[in-house]
Length: 93
Image: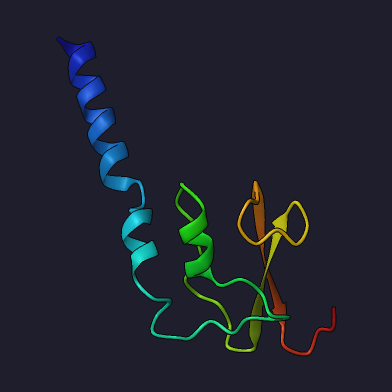
């Protein structure tokens, strides 16, 4: 009985403490528009082409831009991986 109670308490604490990523993904980044770099794919385009959740940071400084790099290189639809590269606006490629 004690073991079952511990499992229930553990499960409840994990459930209540773990972040709700899916809810965070559906909301815009605090009303700020994402600035993209170098004709990059956009977050909505990436979400359309993948079958998993795309996690995006919530607090991004205003002077940063985003470049999304897909792998294999330059793939626009049939990519297997991607990376979000946040850079200062003043950085050059």
